[in-house]
Image 1 (cartoon, helix red, strand yellow):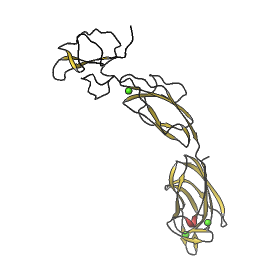
Image 2 (cartoon, protein in one colour):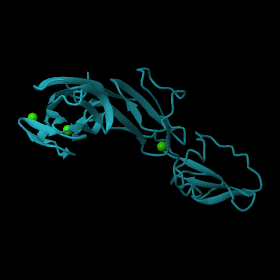
Image 3 (cartoon, protein in one colour):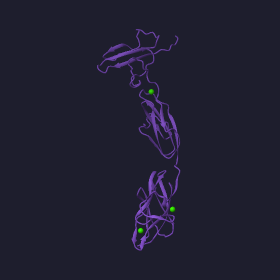
Image 4 (cartoon, helix red, strand yellow):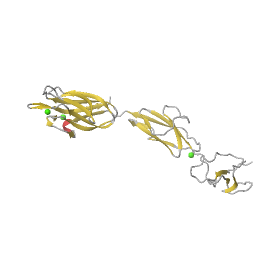
Length: 288
Ligand SMILES: [Ca+2]
Ligand SMILES: [Ca+2]
Ligand SMILES: [Ca+2]
């Protein structure tokens, strides 16, 4: 018997307004049927589902159809196309931590793994962008409403550490100075106050702040200097020298832009005694 390309689609439709079930048929052109039916013609109507005997391949109906399509005339073929899921950004080499978004081109359930093993239907389901903080092989696939399963896709991410910060800021050039005036090579903070500048920290970690400073002893004490991040104290030192010297403070700073301030906190003035803090520069390095 010669084979011939032909199809018969049978749609079972339940009425929204009454417990009525109808069967519609669509037949490929030239295919003889008995009894003869035309595409879109109702060949059964009743209050319960009929028993339909036919030869050929049946597909599950309903869920396999594209959502919202008009299926009553049999003109919409079943969805047999698996979803296409895309990772954004795609695999590659990136600097610093990353968040990867998975999106399918149709409504689909996406599962994924990050441990190098191929995902299965039981793998974690994707619901929100995936934060990556180390080299990761991301594997995933989507399953659409019709049960069509996408082949596993693989994206490899290589995350390089952000380049370290090594930055020197001159105190006299900082954009914020709450008090004081210029002095040779730096800025003299003569009452309680600070100089400050915004700094972008490339990654979270411990940074070193090497401050070149000097001071005047008065009222029985040397000046006290704080290194502040967004006006929170990272560390404090006593500047016990009248010549420029480097004082070092270390502490954890979160990635992002922060105000770095060098503050004088124990001013004293009783003429002729005058306790002051002079600041030349700060070198910021890290993370380490
Ligand atoms: Ca599909
Ligand atoms: Ca003073
Ligand atoms: Ca300076």
